[in-house]
Length: 351
Image (cartoon, rainbow, N blue to C red):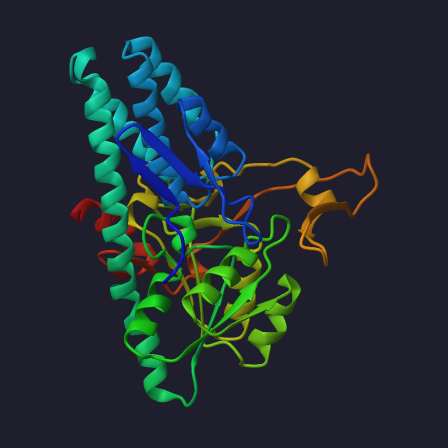
């Protein structure tokens, strides 16, 4: 793949791939301090639950380089945690760094936090690779019984741009490519932020056949038997198997169930929240009206412009996520295997 790294870390420097500039421009944003990290997460320069978690971990490490006191540890943890309430990987990573730093003297906190953030970064790379290995069997089974490429539908972006490795939902796709299993990916645009454009860009960089579709076209493709399976990522998985993902995922799951198409969720074990009993308890982030009322794109001269779709003052509701109930999910692909959603409590306890 020729996809740029989402996070570049050197001894005294952190840069994140600014995903608000994609797919039109590849630009990196420096994180000089922990407030920069918080802003990058909040503004969605950094997006994707695993990547958000690792960025948050480095943000807390940056805070402790600035001030290793208990007060700073608590303040930075709280403010970083508040940036994206739905993605549980953020809390998972921040809590680990907080606990490790709190156990050592202040003079050792910054280095302890930095080392743990690096370990979380490396761990996500391994998790992505393992998710690909665990999930590719599903694609191979379909390829063995049909002519032509395996037709996969996804939603939002859950690939290399959302992680530190090859992704979650796209990891089995990349693994299929490596094993010469032919695939074709249906990529929905994912309004209002159009993260599907990131998926299409990413797949183009990797040389994987795909087609960008309007969100509302997903149902007819499923009804026409033009989809073999759906794989999405997740931002939080409740212990009963309910999954929160980018808004619009639930509609795809409903249409898939109505047409007998298997629906899978791919996510690392860190996305499973053992303290969340069901999807009703998952906090759903509401975002601003501008995401719905405006649209950014590149004009014929290559200039990126923002256009207004709705008049100023239009009333808007903009939930960023929805919840797909476990009953609509065939399996959850993690680094440890493909699991029945109803067995997650046992899966987590075995780790």
